[in-house]
Amino acid sequence: MRNVRSAAASRLGKNKRNNYMSSETTGTPQVCMLVVSCLLISYGIFDLFQSTSTTRAQVERAYLSHLSNWTEVARPQLQASSFLVTWNLQTASPASSTPSQPISLLQHPEPDRFAEIVRAEHMPTYENLVHVSSALPPGSLPLDQATVFPYEGGHQSGLHLSPNTLSLSIQATSPSGAQSTLTLPSFSLGKLKAMHARTPNPGRKCPDLQKGVFNKGTGRCDVYLRLSLLCVQVHLVDDKWELNYMEAVEGDGGGYGCSSTDAWSPEVYTLAPPSPGIVAASETPTFPQDLNAISLHIRHAGDPYLYVEAATQDTLNFGAPASDLRAVGLVFIAIGILLCINPVLSLKEKLAENDRFDRGVYEPVGVDAGGAGSLVVEEGGMELTSMSAHHRRGQRLD
Image (cartoon, rainbow, N blue to C red; front, side, top):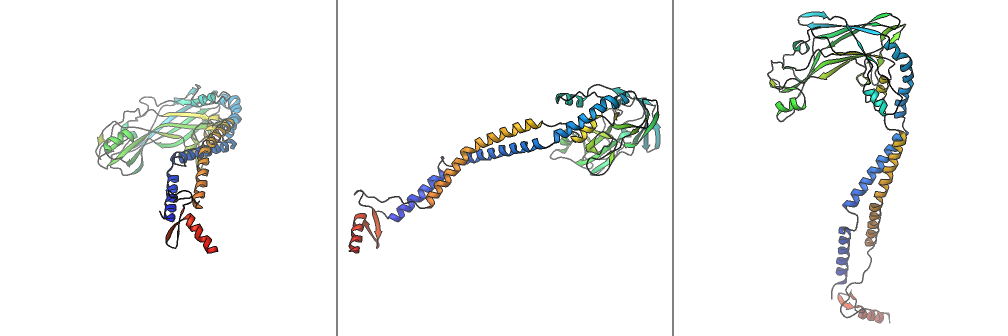
């Protein structure tokens, strides 16, 4: 004979453990599937929300509202005008000012990246037109390495501007022949950023990853930038060309440049990787780039490119159509719902099984070899068969 209570408890605990450990119940695969389905549904809802926003509509409106004026008015005005630029180099040591000869800007009507984007978006055709001076004529100004990067090393962290600057004066002639002079302030020819050198092996990571030169005197990575482009926007006022001042899209300030994310600043600096090597604190690296390659672009303020650039934060990305976003969102939601059916049903079944076990369902245990009438129970510290227990209870009733 076995103790009924201990046997029942043992059987009940074993069944519970088997239930939790069974591969048929909710496990890692079902949980992973449930997480994936939730992510898909969330992404689908996000796409549906994006389809209700007016981002693409705003960009299209910014482009189309200025396209007709650009094609009929602004572009012909720019095409019928001419511009001459005079550069002026100002050095700090020794203090001097060296002007260049006037340089005529050329019209650039070839399709650019923005025109290709407009074509890919199946929007009405955009015809580009920019007045361009691609580079300073060789020998026009003494722009050598010592002038652009007059650094002697030993700089600590931070940004250091070259004391030598470049200013320019633009002689503009309108379609009617009226002339005006556009004067731009001075711009630093170069910049140096003394940055933390990546470790380990900074002598290799600095030129390979940070595009600088490792300064063993300071232990920092010196990254150099040079002035490469000046872009300004102009408009006609009383039949004379003037700089078009734009308020910054975010924050204070503004300018007359061509980049909305840079607060419409006209100057653009590009990375100037020095020749490979490690320099001492008092040395200056060498640069293989053409330091005279400073371009000037003049755009009309009515150019749709500038408005789309401001609406897209310089990405020129029109965004997906609302119908495409809705379709993609609904597909993701449908897939997510289908994937979550199986794990949800498994979870429901598991909860139902746990609820039955928590109620302590009685199972007949302890039946000995004597047959169905010999269920073992315990009474008064004695083990009796079910038939004898029933007989004794009957005697008590009598």
